[in-house]
Length: 433
Ligand code: UDP
Image (cartoon, rainbow, N blue to C red; front, side, top):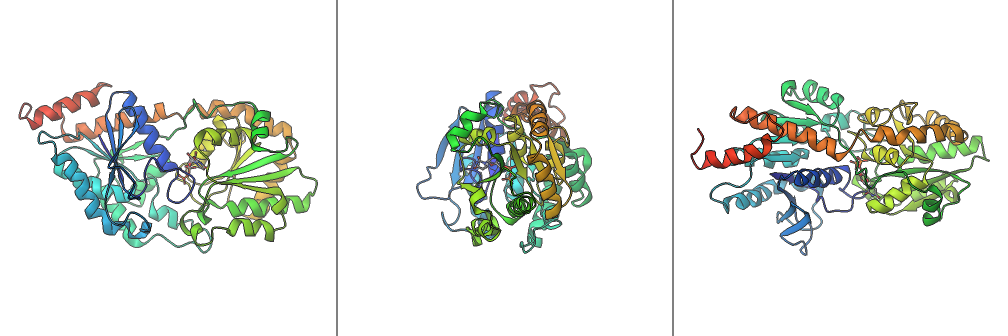
């Protein structure tokens, strides 16, 4: 299958710039599909002259770096200007195989959907699309001063929704938004939850993790992990922490911020460091650059609580990863976080972003180690429900249905995907009418 990820490579370090949960999603689902015998080729835009044309990402998973526009310095908002060049690179790859090569296209994010839709038409194969985020939803809950997504994006999303054979939504809420705002046909939407690599993100020795990160074992560590930009609201955590310690100066609170600037956060990359100083809590706040997954697992284990205060979040992989490591989550009650966190059992959901509410939630949790412990104990079990294996099961089901829509001859068994592959090849060779 061809996976299209125009604007960000699955091999980029997540947690900074344009690389985040979608990169993790694309790579992890590709690895899991490849384990089941599906050959996956991921098309992404080359962003460095040193990017090789093809990279082996994992057994059965190739990354094709397509030259489309300048390698560096192309702003995300200018990417639509390069979709034609990118699509040409994708189509040329298939053209090298006169008998046909790709049996299915799965596009991620609307830019990829535009390319996927063209490839689907040229190749006569199904298109499955995952939006990951939707302009209309994001614009409805922007952080103060954040730039709204342009109207052209929503139009582009609308076109992809109309064209895709099937849409994959992270949650039932997202499916409802696709239907209500974008007019998607509900019978063509599959709800498939994302996951976490549960072999990597699992509970471990908290004291060893603390020692590795040089954190004081007596403090209560509350951690933010992710791309640093207003939409993710790391400032809400800092402001709430400042309020909480102003009210209770003995609170043994330390805040850890892990990640790098992204989106509009790139305009002032030191804004959060400056804010910690302005709030007078700089000595209680540590910053770490983006961490690779194994080290990030140690960060979660070393933390007593992970905060996800985002204004908008289509799912929130960080919340699942933290819980899988046995760390409860304090999250905004937005988007997929209401699914990712079981309120009152594996974490706490806060309605809205009022600093008083966040400070109160923080203070009550930090001053109640027994409650934190109980939430922590329940967290891994909840996270077990979210694995990339489950996600791959859902995707294969969606691929099967996408195939069935275009050709009713496709079987309905679990292994239909493989059979579809054979059928397509036969059909192209004139063997199946
Ligand atoms: N991440 C990482 N290292 C970091 C920070 C984040 O690998 O230092 C990863 C994290 O493990 C997660 C992803 O980035 O899988 C962020 O996904 P999430 O869904 O939480 O947010 P998104 O980036 O999609 O908005």
